[in-house]
Amino acid sequence: MNDELHDPVVVPPAALASDLLKGIVESFVLREGTDYGARELSFEQKVAHLMHQLERGEAQIIFDPNTQTVNLVAVSTVPRR
Image 1: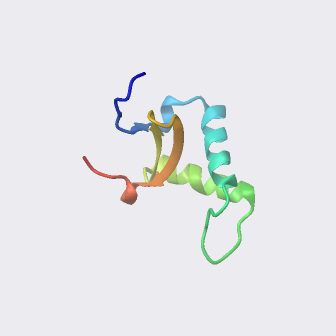
Image 2: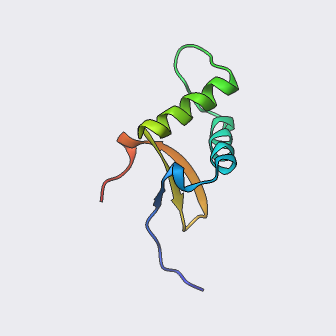
């Protein structure tokens, strides 16, 4: 068994098929505890908002090869190496 740890990988949205990208974003939006501020937004609005953040580079898709998980994070919270 390989116990070597690998750094998380930033996945450019353009590198993903559109249906896969949408699925990742929808999955993130559906996670319990996702907060979009003071006013309530519909599911579709939340998905669109996050897609725009990805397009503008304000959020990134991070793949963790150690846990085989994908997460979306605000660029300001992405650790710099």
